[in-house]
Length: 450
Image 1 (tube, rainbow, N blue to C red):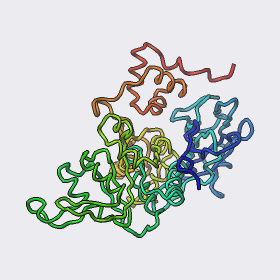
Image 2 (cartoon, rainbow, N blue to C red):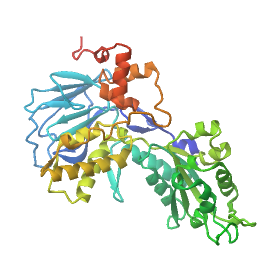
Image 3 (tube, rainbow, N blue to C red):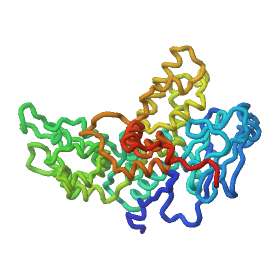
């Protein structure tokens, strides 16, 4: 039987494409078309020689051609570990990360290229992403997210795990991970109780989780808790770091003994419940600092999966936008411009899928109010999808100077790209440049090889 580390171990390459740790052989760079003729797509063009040329025929949809794309539009190459994108004197231009290019430019893996109504994602290795994006139970799953979910299902079925820690940002899909964990268990028809620990009043946490007996306090009645309600199934504790310490102690007993003690009771009850816990915090650091019980951390973190943020899953964004348009009854009534999808794919979305979908709904409402027939980038809010400025939990952490320099070098002087890589607002990158009296162009190499 594989070990737990083998079941859950994954690695990432420079393009953000997730690879199984056992992947062998040289990487295969490629271009992934995630939008074709303004509609979500997933087509892979492997760059197996020095370059490929893409135009109207290559990016056709059946017999339908994109008239905005020239017959020979763009040349994309991967030479000596670097991407080169060259506009072939096209009629409507080639855009890289939202900016029009002239001639040939060098760019990074993960860059977005827009030609006509098509969006192309430059991937450093396409071996592990052949299946593309799938819609399962109305949920959008790209290669990165699906690999994480598959590792959960495999560990649950083969590793027989009964507890799992899921980490990731808010809105990145932690509840989807919990549902995968539950559905892969021995009794998927059993209850799945979803609890957000951050919304439970601390003084009520013990009673709500473990239940109560009549007479335990004024007005108390015999009532089961969330744990008993999930008996035979799974209890999903989102934001578990918010649980009070004394409640953490009782939860540990449930995990270790399979017994629960109601508030006011003197006899334990047997329960059979699997625990899926989730948090956006560094739970190991919280345990080390004494803000979370170490013994509980080690118990629930025996199996651990991290969900990548949406900014690393750009291939999912066109599908989320299409779903929202359909849910709002606008499909066929308003066309989504490629520039809108591009603008969404270039933003960091700290609130991830939840924030993206809310902003698309707002943008649709704005476009409809204006009588527009096209959803364009102009209706996007100026702040949506960008990291928040100002103090938050004591203020944003100060980053070392070398991290700013490394990000700017990796993004070849592109301030917006460096900000996305660092997960900060672009104004922080600009302030860093001003403080050190450095021009962003210093990090931009020559566009032509010497």
